[in-house]
Length: 282
Image 1 (cartoon, rainbow, N blue to C red):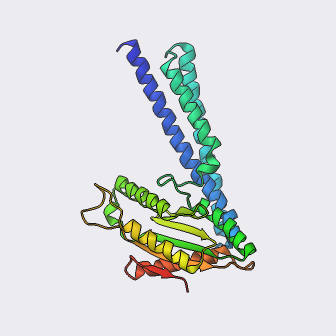
Image 2 (image 1 turned 120 degrees about the vertical axis):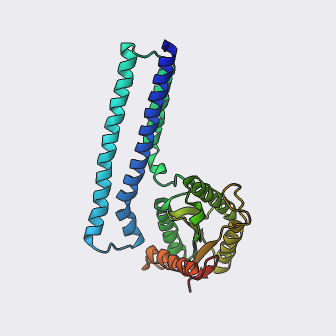
C-alpha cells in the first residue's frame, strides 16, 4: 500500500467518523429538545398530564438524553484529538485530511448552532414537526382570540400504508404527500406540519370560515389522491386519506388542546368510517 492510498483511507475514515457523530448529535438533540419542551408546550395548550409522575418522567427523559448528548460530544472531542494528533505526529498528511477535518468540524458546529430550528423540523418531509406546530397553534390561537376571528384546522392521515413498510418507499410516500400539501395550501398565512409519526399531517388556517376550510380539505383529499410515485405505488393504486376538520372562534377561557382533540376525534371517525372521507366537528 503506497503513502497516498494510506492518506485516502484515513481521509475516508475520518469523514465517516464525523458524519456518524453529526448524525448522533442531531438525533440526540432533537429528541432531548422535543422532550424538554413537552411540559412547557403542554401547559400553554392547556393539556393536563394524567398525573404528576407523567410530567416528572417527561422532564427526566429530557435530562437523561442531554447526558447522552454530553457523552457523544466527549466522543467527538476524543476523535478530533486523535485526528489532530495524527496531523501533528505526521502519521497522516495535511491536505485532504485537513480539509475533511475542517468540513466535518464546521458541519458539526452548524448543527449545534441551528438546533433550535432543527428541533422544529421533520427530518423526512422538511415540514414543521409537532413541536413547531404546537408553537404556531398557540400563536394563532391567541391572535384569533384577541381579534375575534375564526381559526381552521385540518388533521389527516394516510388510510392504508401497509404497502409502504419498506423504509425508502415509506419516506418517498411521505415526501410526495408533503410536497402536494405545500401546493394545496395557497396562502402564505397558512401553516402545515407533519403532525405525528404515524403518517399524520395538519394544516392550520387562520381567518378562515367553514366554507373556506371545506374547500381546502377537499383539495387536499383530491390532490393527494392524484399523486403518482413510479416504483412506489402499484399500478392504478391511489393514496387515500381520512380528514378531520374544525373551525372555531377561540374564547379567552378556552384551551387550544380541546381544539386539537376534537379535530383529531373527527379524523378518527373518518378513518373508522372506511377512510377517504372528510368529517367536520359539529
